Length: 468
Image (tube, rainbow, N blue to C red; front, side, top):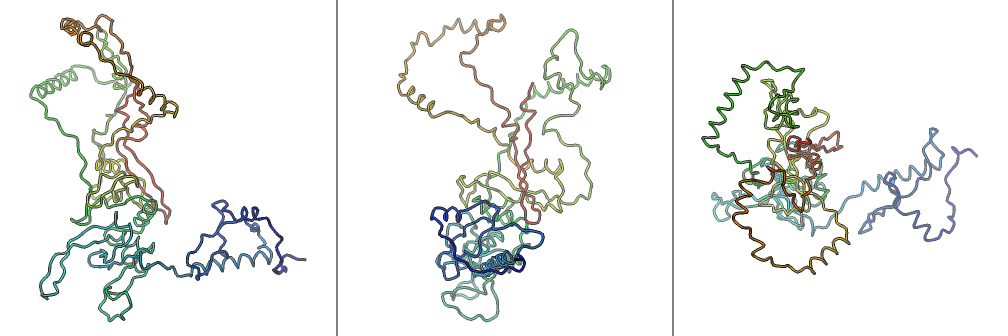
């Protein structure tokens, strides 16, 4: 019989043991699609996530048999019917807000749920007084930024309304709402493009919020928006007069030496003194080999065009980890700073753009070393600490004689090669975590047609950790 002329028919299935049936219905690999035919109908109060199964056949060039086409059509129809279903939410857990296009804000009238512990800010707005028609008073209210309101509308946690002058038919339980309800499509059309919000920035915002991060704006859109405290810059210590005189004399002698000394030879950069070998150390040798100044304190000598277009690499979001204690009215310093760019229109950042980004960020302390201690070592340390009894030293042994300390100060033991080694030698810090992380970090989110890729750029600290 030809497979193309084969028609589907219903045949009784053989009895399958219960354990084998559960194994077949269990979740498989992530690349397998869900069986849409097993999704419950709309009459079920709590829908169940469909289980994944194995593929019955592989696609072939001829198109498969009639049975295969029938199974595919049935699964496709079930998927479309499931997507057409209306998503329902409980009115007891949904919030309500009014979208004001002239303010680009959403005024929250009914706040329910835990979303508003990290979203929204309080703003004082003038409201009319009921007793006096012309008088107004300032009243604080909760407002949402466009990305915050759009995120809650998209996930079905908030109804958003838009004021209108047209007569509206009164609806039960919604008499206190002003305007008409907004659909998700209308919310996207009206909110994206306001307050510097692009589709790429909203996609990054929604993705990070679904992961549990707290996302805020880096630049406050208004004066009422709470911002973290400014980072502490390094205090510039004032030099004394003697230090200034010493620096002036040193620079003058260096100029005179440069005048009478021969010109610098690139083929022989290392200059060794015959009599004094103070410049034969590793740092001096590497400094002689360096033909470009090192360190981030040295300014870049790059000629920029006078009419330079604005750079797309600007910090737009502050990011907080879920474990970071966050207070909405007084946010702490952010854990990460995020830049959002369009991957199809923005090139790779230049060194000038990265330098400008790092100039806005604070310096991070070096990462703490991880202590790998086994459970047995922890128990042994706790037992030894509990059993040890501190013994008081005798005052005669604790204090040294004044003459001994004076002799050690006048004639240090290192002059005679008799320097005593410390009993406990401190382990030198591991430089590789600091070299990997850097002292400043910025995260760049590149959005390519909805696909988000995160790249971390760090300012290196190679000059602070010399290897030789």
